Image: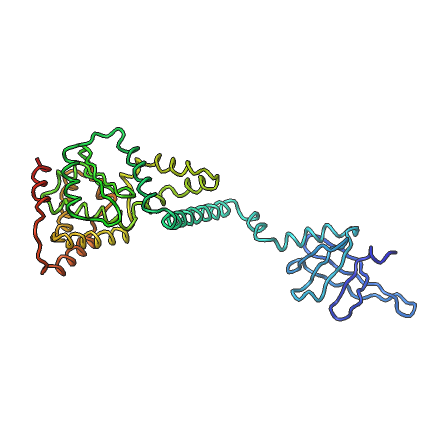
Length: 361
């Protein structure tokens, strides 16, 4: 018989392979030895080898079965041997790959793993897209993006032109940003809300203006929202909220699709929230802007308390608190900041003083 068609067992001690007859089932294989010694047929006890722990490799016309991790002991079995398929399938089943293990899982466990992977993938994308976007989007491009979003949002809104003029005069007099031109639009709406768009635009509802008791609170609101713009929080949050759709558009090389995704989500801007860290950062930067403009930063605390009071009266209309929650931590931080800067000489801005009286009419 041609030796290439005979299974050979290598014990790792000698270089010569010993011819064997292989008997296999689903769990194990047995190697039976018969060899000649001075003209006599000598029998050796068979070796039983469980499939667990074995590895296989296909080389030429043979299946190599490595019996231990060192690979010193192995079996070379030709594809033509009757036991070949049983051994191959048995070892593959007993030592599945990670994918095979996954496929052998209970359907409930498999579903759980899938959900975990899906959630992990989403958060990875949600973190990656804003990080990349902040690196490649310039302030000029950010403004163009913000303008498109603004136009999509205010298309059907009732704008209060007079209050828009008055609030913009206050924003300009306060000198809130060195990078962006701040442009405020006052929308007639009873909802207590305000939000910033990427690139410098701020939308303020008449409802939040009505809840305020002083011009300094208006300055605090503007300083807080402008800080979100200066720190690019608005762009970051918008990119995060639309991350998956943006990534799909980029993958399809659809540049216009990115803009379309953002414009389609313009309505969500009114309820776009920030993380606790971003709110804390905007509070600190906003209060520093107040100090730089000779306005007592206690106005930031007063604004938070004022909105909390309004919330008790009309909880369904305080959208601002859902996206900018006035937590005890934020109020305490505002108090501490104001005390630290108590010795500063604060002078009421004349434009703010004059315009506030007209805004409240």
